[in-house]
Length: 212
Image (tube, rainbow, N blue to C red; front, side, top):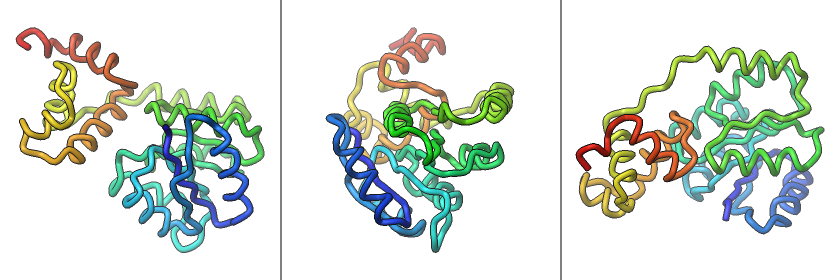
């Protein structure tokens, strides 16, 4: 089940989004926020899988809220929902930690697709974005250098690939299960891995399983 937090300052918008999300068999709404500050707080306390975040928010705007959420709740996938279709907004939101960008004026299926992609650790761009904006985004991110994971994140991935559970990894590394989950989320997001199978494949390529 994909746990979704809705963050938009308009109650009618949140109500409509809630009806849409809860009509899906694999999704549920676990909370709502009407301000950017509240969105950050709820992301940290409710532990949603995905937060659907408006850009134009009172108190703290969506861009700043995304940056804070990426720090205090890095395991939460951020789907930016906005009416802005300019390249600058797309780049800024992805730079702040969002993994999906959807336009409010698009069909509802775009948001549902984005939520599912984000929950799987994948990036998603609204199909209604102009070809120019989409091409610019792809070109810029294709040229990015591969992100490096920390030593602790590597340890966690290595143990997952071997077959240990989060609880067993926590015991081995003297960490909390929650911390293990955060390291796993950070590493898989950086490396664009979508699940255990991808982690094992990555481990094989890195030669981690030779002595396992």
